[in-house]
Length: 477
Ligand code: SF4
Image (cartoon, rainbow, N blue to C red; front, top):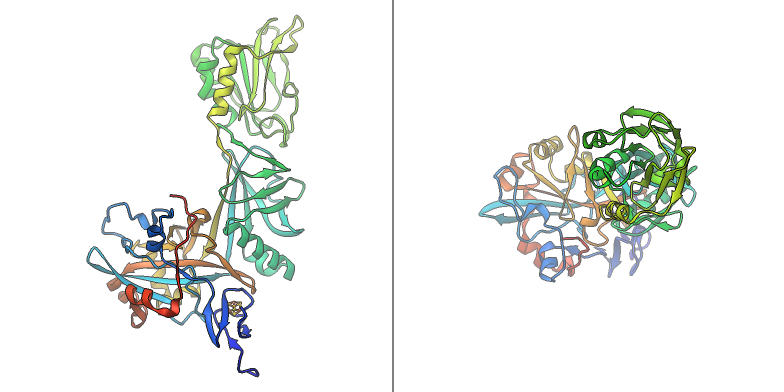
């Protein structure tokens, strides 16, 4: 190295040479008086609790230990601020031992560098964000796509190794930055090709085309009929719950039939699936029930005079109750809009009342099954098996994760359960996320763990090199 004042950081493949008093490219490491230091303090969850702040009940601490999986230590050193070892064959930065109910346990703590990572975003809305498979862009760069819709929610799949590594340099950088901000709870504006502009922030209502979403639908049109049929029966002759996916029609629906609803002769656009359930009554959009329909009568093609009669009463309502209209048939069996009768108002309000608040949910998903395992054990596949057998418990910043079945250690975690600013990045580009593996000491030895590097938790906490212990969390209890 030419300049002796420079400190070389080898915590990731970038290998920055850092000037005195400055930080490296990722702002995670700095040159402090000629020493390489991790900028963010190590987060210890016990201290978070002592500080009176809210954290999630991590590791199932409140449940009885069933003997199959290691219980949480009372002082839990998370990987947030722990740093990374690179290349991975070096032992993880902290391998911490403590006693849990008299049993020696070990927590292996590292900030993983994930090139294979992304987020799954669930957006509680009926509004059409864009066609499935269409690209989602941030700053004009493709960062992901619209994936299959779920019940009351639109889903996005963002990030992933292809956007991080296969696109242009800017695509990788913008993708990494968008993922980092989403994971750290910041708002990110994104645009779907041929679709909407959305501002997404984990745990907050989505803002779609400038409008904040308030309600998540009570159910599909058919489910809404099922839930409220009794409250409508006798007060109105027909109810149509307009839904982009499954529009419900009371008089034909099983719920209406069981109650004794009579045929109204209504004819609905779209494809009849089963009685009282219609698919594809319109195109997706920003109108009623996630359709492009602004006037609900567009989906009613007429009434059969064999069953319909003048004066027939009909309520049309969306799946959130946000839109509703009441009609009576005139002499020519044409619906004429009238004021909503008071005895139907309650049912419309009840639909709205049963809607949950619309939120955006961000799940971080990454693969820890690669070389990261070598920081835990010299025989990486044993760690994977041990996780699979529930001998080793995986957490992210102390938050519980879901580990996918199958090969590797591919996990997902709700980013709102992690302490604040738990995620970082390196400019390779890749995300840095905390990951901890907790298991019994004897099991750790059996899987070929780096037992020579195990340090008691008290020693770790006293180590002045660790800088201050931060007591901060944004986790919901
Ligand atoms: S990007 Fe960060 S972790 Fe990587 S070498 Fe530079 S300072 Fe170290």
